[in-house]
Length: 105
Image 1 (cartoon, rainbow, N blue to C red):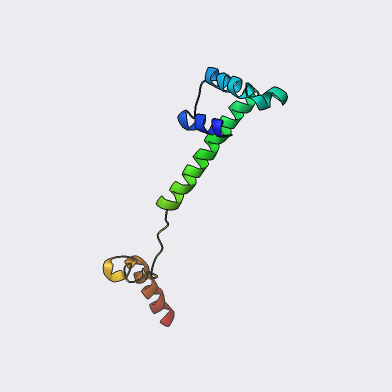
Image 2 (cartoon, rainbow, N blue to C red):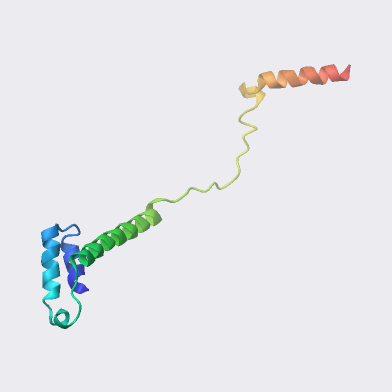
């Protein structure tokens, strides 16, 4: 429906009186004189669906352009960073050496 799309581009949130005037305009066409009339609820639903469709298409395109997950290029060996010479795990290493010595005796 080109008229509804045009009206939606002009105002995606029209008030109730505006929707009722749209209903009257659409129902005054030659086609609607011989066929079923458009109701206020149908027009209201059309605008609600159009807003949801616009919102979903906007969020989909913004997700594609802005959210890119960084990918590690090579594995990182953290053992060299967290070793006893840097002050990490020194207590654990001391206990391991004590148990190793006690096992030898």
